[in-house]
Length: 223
Ligand SMILES: O=P(O)(O)OC[C@H]1O[C@@H](O)[C@H](O)[C@@H](O)[C@@H]1O
Ligand SMILES: [Mg+2]
Image 1 (cartoon, protein in one colour):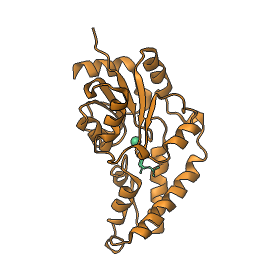
Image 2 (tube, protein in one colour):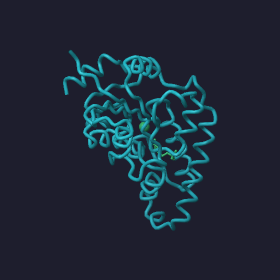
Image 3 (cartoon, protein in one colour):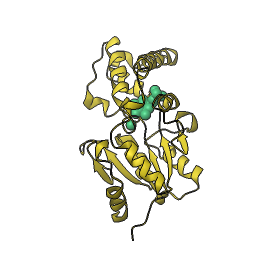
Image 4 (tube, protein in one colour):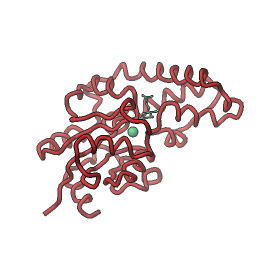
């Protein structure tokens, strides 16, 4: 008989809803204001990473921007967040990605603990706009952790809260940094995206529409 996990920890941006796209558009807008161009390939290095670290990576693209004061960096990070907030103002419950709600329903039926593990300070607002505030048993957002992905803390924080061992947890992510964090925690990692970016995932699917409870449990048991 298949062994079941005890907790499932979902990334938010790019897994529950497509706010990963809004983060990209907001960074692209800020970068252009600074005279820097970023593309989707570069954006893979921003996914899952904190706001200030993302900014540092963009500034490093242009040597004349690299030695900016902390004050100026904070001002730019706040500006990016204003761009981002104008995108998420349009979010509504219909923006939950395909496959997510059926999986959550099945996991709840199986009595598994469900958490969000997000690096975003906007996570509470995004969950509210999606009408998912009451859906998860626990939410790890940027306020709860001191070390962001790829450090495992985002995921271990949720497991510790539930009091379950890490090998009994599954993490679901769309970023390379997030998959590394799940693996570093000793959990089973489910990647959503391209093999070129998420080659370290224990189990990989292209899109959330392919999220399937039985397939995930089977892969977890084969690991
Ligand atoms: O700027 P926020 O909303 O606090 O988000 C921090 C990070 O949150 C992560 O979930 C996103 O993948 C990153 O792109 C983002 O930079
Ligand atoms: Mg993500």
